[in-house]
Structures are given as structure tokens and as C-alpha cells.
Image 1 (cartoon, rainbow, N blue to C red):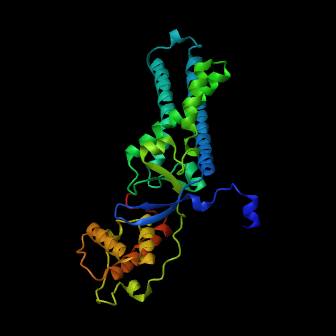
Image 2 (image 1 turned 90 degrees about the vertical axis):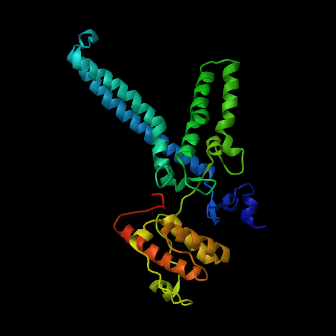
Image 3 (image 1 turned 60 degrees about the vertical axis):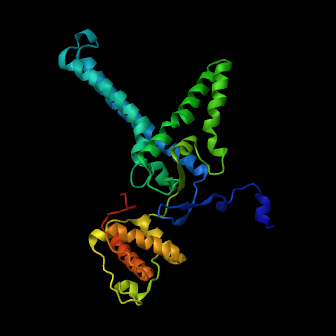
Length: 311
């Protein structure tokens, strides 16, 4: 046993967080679960952003409301007509914005093409569906609506205990602590919201495409050395897929498993409206990989990103 291992007997290994995601096409993709510390750091960043936005909106709307009150000498009975309606509108607007900050922030960003809030993006993680499919609205709603049980209610119960609450407050705090500590109680580091929503949080791929896989001159020209077929794909056929699918295709080509090559070849052909045929799958996939990569790299140089086929 190495000296480093002796000094750090309880330190979690990165390999403990490695999992395999199976896509709907039956392709096995390796991924790494986000660590608990990284997830907590991302949450703190997001809460700081929300708090800053709440303070800014509160100050702006309060300043506007105070200006209206000063115009009538702070006598609400004198506040009539449009001025009264304007003050009521500010109150309603404030309530709506607080609700959006509390729930809409996470929903908006996690339903986006990156599947990540600003905090998650800064820490290099994202939300993914455990079934390998697309991250759906229902999944994101479920995982975020449970955040009140995991975070808001425990904090409220803690405040009640600090304020001198009785045994009921202590019991509520103990019960809610189970939800708050749920990521520490299971091997996959799942929140209760992840368990209900069918999601997990994983390390996000690098923003830049990895070095291109060597596919040879035949793939560059799109001509098969086996059959002589020339594979040329149009803009509409290449625009279907994004960076995630490119990385998936590259893994399939590197592993070179015949059953995976056939499955992916058929899936792409169905998607772009080609007749799959048989016997020339690798040449087809190499040509598609090369041309898709070229299209995505051109888009990135122009400031246009396509994270996946759903973007």
C-alpha cells in the first residue's frame, strides 16, 4: 500500500463516482457523478445570485414605492386613482418576482440546453436524466419542488428551535434533516428530488471539443474504401445533432463494437431519412463524424453552440 493511501484512508476515490449511462439507442456512455462538495458549492453560488437579485429588486421597488408615498405626504388615504393602482401593481410585482426567484430560477436554467444553473456551470456540473433520455420538464419540476422540503422547511424548523420551540419543533427538524442529508445516505449522491425526478448530477463535459479522432483520408473525403460509396451530408442532415451526439459517436467509433456501430448507424439514418442498408456502417459513421465535427467547429468559431440535438 502506498504512503499516500495510508495518509488518506477515508478519502473518496474518483472511480467511486464513475457510472455508465445507457442511452435510448442502447449505447453505454461512461460519466462521473458530481461530488457532494461540488454540488454544495454550486448551490451556494446560486443562492448568492438569487439573494443579490432579491436585494436589488427590493431596493428598486421600495425606492419607487417610497417616492409615491412622499408625493402624498405618506397619507395612504390621499393616494387615489392611478397612483394607488401603481402602488398596488408594485406590491403584486414584488410578490411575483419573489416567487420566480424562489422557483423559476432553477427551472429556467435546468430546462435550458446545458441543464445547469450558473452555479453548476461555474463548478463544472449539470443535471442529467438517469434513463439516458432527454431531461424533461416533469423531471426538473419534481426535483425542484422538493427543494422546499429539503432546504426551506429544515431552515424554518431550525429557526423555530432556536426561538425556543418545543418537542414538536425538534421532531420536525429531525424528520426534515433526513431529506436535507439524503445525498449522504445513498451511493449515487442523490437528493430526494433526484430520486423522485429520475435525475442525477454529473460532471459536465469540457466546453471545447476534444482533439479530433483520426479517421483517415477516406472519412475526410466521405468515400468508403469497402464499397466505394460517397457519403456527403447536407446542412439539414448535419444540423440535427450537437456536441453531445458527436462525443457519443466518437466513443462508439473508438470502441468499435459491431452491434453498437449497427445500432447507431440505423438510428442516424432514421433521423436524417436515409436507407440504412448494411455492411458499410463504419465508413458511414466515420464520414458523418468528420462532417458533423467540421460543422460544429465552424459554428463555435462564429460564437454559435449546439450542445445536443434538443438545443
